[in-house]
Image (cartoon, rainbow, N blue to C red; front, side, top):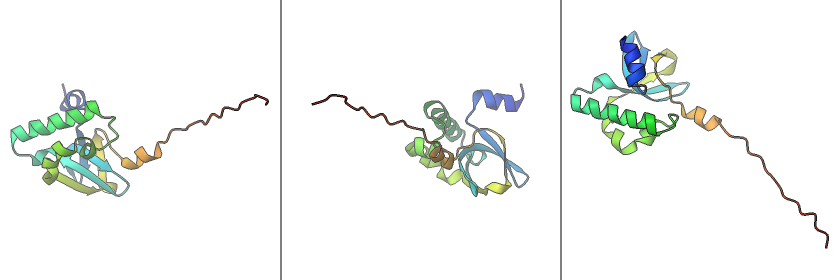
Length: 124
């Protein structure tokens, strides 16, 4: 089994991006037209911290709608990883694998609502 297939099946919340001829593995926090914010998994040196980070990512993936950034959905538990956030210029980022979260898309998806008015036909 290829590593890519393994990531897609077992860690679907993990993204792989390319920036400046370097690959980064982690979780995309948010990507808009200007900036991509990303948790860099390789910046975590302690194995126990990596496992906890992956557990938080799994919780976000299976318990959210995946359109809300992990920093909002798992606010308290993910704060300890603020030191591994990388910020990139979006025009130079190429997403190789994984999910892209974009808050702008969330606000643009509005549902159409119908208004129903009940009129009485009673004569007095």
